[in-house]
Figure (cartoon, rainbow, N blue to C red):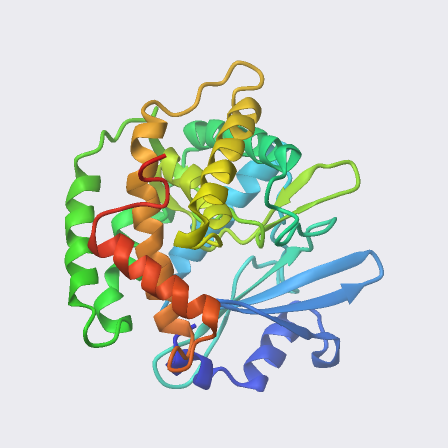
Length: 332
C-alpha cells in the first residue's frame, strides 16, 4: 500500500465505516490488505469482510462497477464473495478522510472453505483443473456482461502499477520503465475483439480464492478487475506458480509450467469451451507484464532496503528478465 495512504488511515475511519454496516468497532479484526484496508467481523449467521478503498486508488464509479460485475457473476451462479448493503441500503459508504484521500467502505460475504497456500498449490493437478473450469466460466460470463457506460471499469493501460510505475520505482530503474514502454507498445498491437478481450478478474492467485470441502472454488478480491485480454487472467495464475522457482530451479519451473498448462486446459475446455486463441504464443507477453507489475508493487508497498535472501534473489532475477525482454517460460 502507498505509505502516504497507510499513514492517513485512522481508527475512527474504520469505526465509522463499521457503524454504517451495523458493526461495532470491537467486532472488527484487521486482516491486512495490499491495496485496501481489510477487516473481518462475525455474525450469528457467519463471517463477513469490511473493506476500505482509498479514493486515490479507485473512484466511486470504479468501485460501483466492480460490485455490479460481482453481483452479475453471483446471479449467474458463479461462487464469489457477494457485496452486502449498509444500514441505509447502500452498497458503498463514503468515509470522509483528511488530506488527499477519502475511503469507500464496502462489505462482503466471507468465502467458505480454506485457502491453498505454498507449497500445497505446487504440483497440484486437481487445483489446476478447478482453476481452469472456474476461469472458463468467468470468461463466458464476461462476454455476456453489459455494464452501463457510467459504470465501466478501467482498461489494462489504466492499471495503477503501469500508470504510476515511475513514481513507485526508485532512482536507477530507468531500464525497467523503458522495458515497460516497449511492452505497452507490444500489447497495443494485440487484437481487441469480444473473443479475446473483456472484463477479467485481474488477480486470480491462491490468496484470492478458497476451496470448500466438496472442492468448489469461491473467488474474491475483484479490486483489480479490468478490461484486458483473457490470456492475462490465465498468465497471472501461472505466474504465481512459477515465480517461486529461481533461475537455479529452471527444471522444476518447467515441470510446474507443463503440469499447470495440461490440467488447466483440461478444466477450461470441459464442456466444449475453447482456450483463448494464440494463448501459448501470448503467455510470455503477459508473464513479462506481471513481472513488471509485481516489481513495481513491491517497491510501492515494502521496505526493500534489507531484503531477505528470497526477495533479494527474486529482485535480481526479475530485473534481468525484464530488462532482457524475457519471461518465466522462455526456452521451454
